[in-house]
Image (cartoon, rainbow, N blue to C red; front, side, top):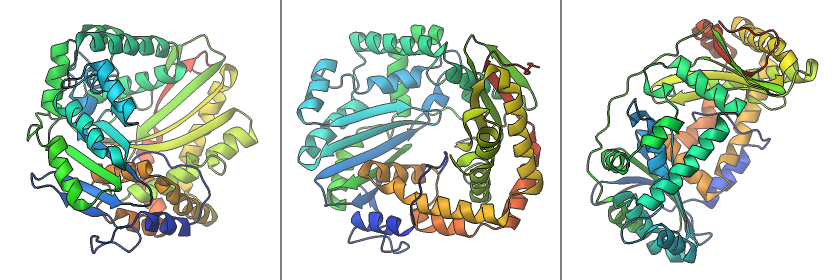
Length: 450
């Protein structure tokens, strides 16, 4: 997947048991008997991936409209975020109060949010309330109201959140890093907008975003629960069939991070400095992504056994938490490391992180480190599938990443196949990434911006 791994110690047989519990009778022949994903295509041509599970009378749907905040106008970031927050604030004949009440009466969970590359949604419901849940979802994506009262209420909440984040070192470091790395590119804009831009967003902006971005062509759907493929095919057309056939998306260019080798300091009167170090990484479709994923785990992906944890926390006591992770956005791959430490130890912490990064790229890991990483990463994979919602989320991300329906079966084998030679090759490819863009929020000692 495109984000960091979850830190748990489980063994691979659990994955088999979990996936058998959500198996289907009919499945794609390319898959093993443990994963049983059915590709459902509605009469109207809408596709979804389904794992049928009749163990409990529940249904979970995860879906995404590709595009996201990268589609915001340059002068008005925050439209996608505000629009997504308003999709469940009144639709069709229901104003916000009646919409929320209708959801509550049937214990339906309906949520939307926007990221850089997608607007995502989720529905969770009891099987007996499936019709009502899909009706409310249909209204929210095809007939959002964007009533004045709701717009102003959610705008006020978003502005309050932005004000809180204006003094939060983690938020400030993250926003500054992306702004410096991607000037004049959609990834450089804050997903939730700014105080000025959010205040200026109009109802017309929101309606236009929904009309241009919520369409069948950029829709991805994953469903887990008590529903047959035939029933789901019918529901897909009923829920999404009235959307425009084709999204009107503005092309977004592939990009590389700028400012590598520079350090930026955000003065902030806090006892701890937040450090964010970012550089070039690999895109999700890169053949070397999995070896890079393993390499990152050894560097800083594990909460207890990584090199960064051992050197920064255990050996020197510089910070309680230190980590590294990959980010694979639609148009760029990135590699991050970060920590929070006392102001007077920020400079030393950055130095150690950089040294460990350079050392693993120069010399690579040991066979023992590789073996431990493989055991951890294959064993913990099962916990991504221990609830219906998690399974649906994984299926959705696999679709977005274009990994293929059999990826769940192949994933652990891909990890097991990684060799020291693969890691050395990836290290050579990433050697230029030793230059990083460093952003520090706080009063760091021994850190000077340039």
